[in-house]
Image 1 (cartoon, rainbow, N blue to C red):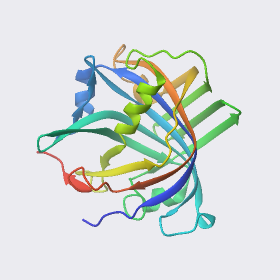
Image 2: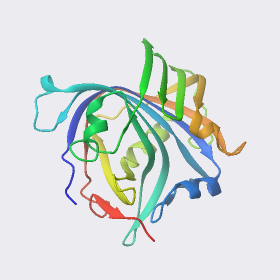
Image 3: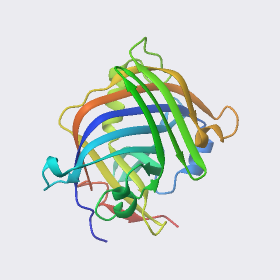
Image 4: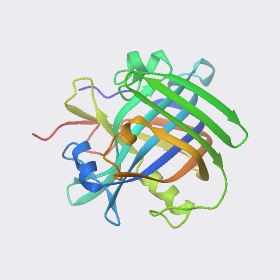
Length: 242
């Protein structure tokens, strides 16, 4: 299988909304050879909403780049590479407002995407946004700042280190059987705490009562990023375990 070319972009904003997940539920959502990464016996999942500008193959000028809103539902995972345990995320589903990742995702752009409609209202450090797709929706109204609270991490710096170490994202390819890996890299990495005024996800809300509990929200802003097949993760793709 050919490796998807790397993509560069400017990250205007990335909301990361995280839940404490029942580990047994999480195991049913993650395909082998991946397994949920547990923190104090709990899995961690959630969704992110990214606003991207200047999206282009890495050899293109930023002036020729595209713009999109994107969302992904994800679960933190780990896997074995020889004697080493690696960490990342399994992406259950990606959505985008733009045509290019929907048509060319998994080919010219990393990751298979579905088309969705986004509504975004951004003022200073407050972000209100919604996504609607066939059979799925989410909305979040969050504001940067406020006191940090999380059952997983004692500080926003701990959360930042966790998200940076989990930069490899696995998802299913077009054949629905092959796991493909994409790594997100940024020369600078800045994560800010945020408060949730309201958060809803049709995916997590549909899980059994009490199995998905909102834990924390963080925001990343104004960063240049690269998305490409990782040099490790046992190559860029691997078949599912049978």
